Length: 198
Image (cartoon, rainbow, N blue to C red; front, side):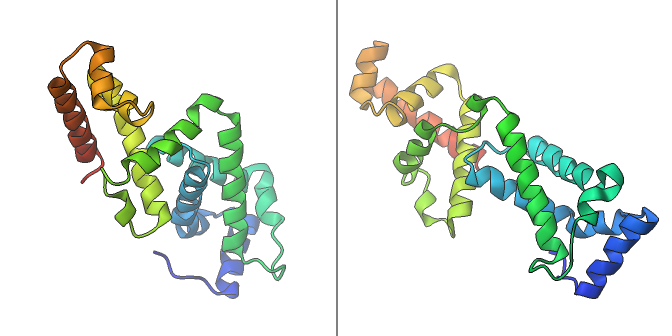
């Protein structure tokens, strides 16, 4: 984690970028801050997390900062209750929100998936996470991992956790033995745990 800059250091980096068009220091200094801000915005809005998309939005933030002769950086006013890092966080947050608004609404995690959180907390030991952010990150990984399951595993997992059917009800619906359904469900959970690094 980069150390916090003084107001003087922020001013020097900002001037170097705006006046002399040398923005490498600014990019290096705030790259991780922008990435983390975008990530937190996605999590707060219950959007699926993919590294590629986070990096794409991170690049969009830099484009917004440097576009139009660094117009947004020029808009920053020192002493307005927000330092340069805070201003960049604001731009990153707005860029991430605009990106999410432009996406297909089906790409954002539905309320149904959020209900899944409560159902699988114990199964995946999510309740023991250090904070809500880590718990949500793990949930997003699990949701992403569902795509990796075999069709029958995904079906059983979905029926059990999302549609709240008992294993015996699933066995009847899929015309299978309950022992077979139990095995499929256990295998699905095991594979999901492996995917999220349990």
